[in-house]
Amino acid sequence: MAHAGEVLGFEEYVRTRQDALLRSARRLVPDPVDAQDLLQTALVRTYGRWDGIADKRLADAYLRRVMINTRTEWWRARKLEEVPTEQLPESSIDDSTEQHANRALLMDVMKVLAPKQRSVVVLRHWEQMSTEETAAALGMSAGTVKSTLHRALARLREELEKREREELAGRALDVKERERCAA
Image (cartoon, rainbow, N blue to C red):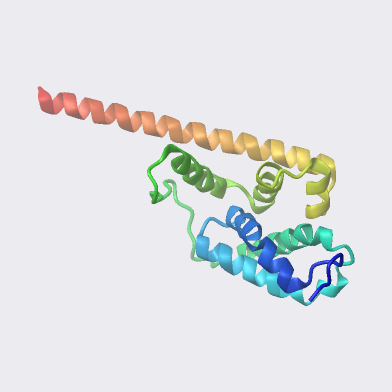
């Protein structure tokens, strides 16, 4: 166990940072159980290298990088039986408040992004890392981060607009159906 003034030991680090790290994992994978598995796997991998992290203040960045790499490995190893569909399944929302609905929608829309794009969006917008910090965490140039973020945000906007059009079209059909039944 670390003494006062020394860097945190691994166990203490995990205890103090667990919630924030789980939030990061949750943003990288949509399923809460997968997020817990991702964090656990990243912690196991990090534990083996803990002594090699000279500056423990960078432990969060190191662990995020391990989570991103692990998620990418999982994505590449996904089963070939997965078939993309035109229509996404309905997402369940436990809480009916608008904030939770918006968060669920955003998490669902994030699924359309490639893993690299998703990582950049998560680090820049949720983790509020600078362009340079994101570039260092992902092992890419600042220019690549900017262009990837630009393309990812454009893709998210496109998907949200598409869903809004589909929702409006669905409402219009509902209104016409009610008018027809009332006549």
